[in-house]
Image (cartoon, rainbow, N blue to C red; front, side):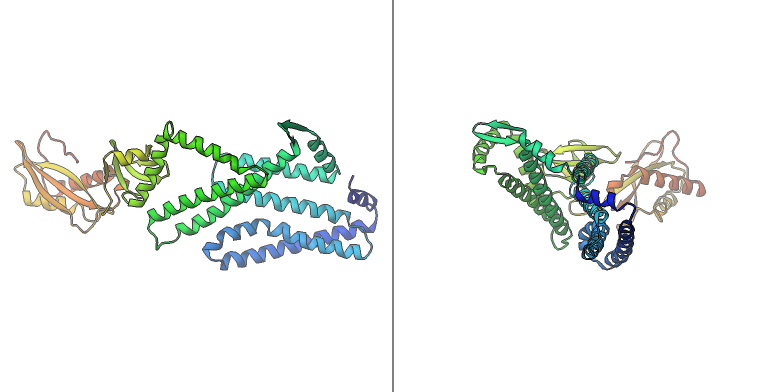
Length: 414
């Protein structure tokens, strides 16, 4: 059992425990007040680009500031030849709290809203508090010795469970730090408005791949892996790309070509292989096309290079929407045209330039077919809702002006 447990037990009925409780309570209150004050100032004055660091500080500022005050209190008691076991216990718990909060924030920031992050956070909490419990009971050294004695041989090399755990921890920590740095740089790069969006996406993807590669090589080197052995894997990968993986490689190369030639952008309205929708995400291997009914279609980048793609918003996002109505020959044609044109006035999505236009589409046996054409700049929102609104206003105008719809014909939209 650790010495501070013996001190706490020995001081339980003495004035020393009251001194420690008083100092601990004062330290926590000071830390709470300073945390509120600093966070209010930092969040109010920090630029947006510092938001990442601010949120990281916000999660650990309380346990770390409390740790400082508790450590000062312990030093004062030790100079006064008083016991400080309770404060030593508090220091250990505050360190564990800071480590857990920082690890949880790092996972959420690096891996965003991945489903497994919550499970990983629970595992980190379990491991940290498990190590704290072993330390507090004085069994941590015995536990590490036990893991070190659990060993096995691979060839002439001896490996222990403790060594494997340490290697995995170092490798994971190195990768998380690398991904954290990559995410920070990627966010800064995506805010560089002077660069074209496609160029920002390409650079961010290349930066992420490069940092992951550096992180993996660094982690392997730290744990003692001979990275020269990767040359064999590189040769095997080259052969695989030449045979079974060529389609995958083609999709990745096609993705970078699309981003660099600026033929597609996130948010463009596309028609690909009969699928019409908005380019929601343009990834390294595939395009996510969100159709107007909410469904998403995953289209390999290779298909975007080898097949015809209709980009409805490449150079101009404005798109025309038409509705048709057939009026009887007895109706005043000029009045009907005026009513249809005025029906587009005041509709939120209809642009004033180009102006709405009405044309005689054809002369049918039972009436004159008129077509109203309007322009919108948000084709990703679809046309059916707009057409319905226009039809309603046209019908209301026809009723007011006694315009008769041709008998037996239902107005149609295009």
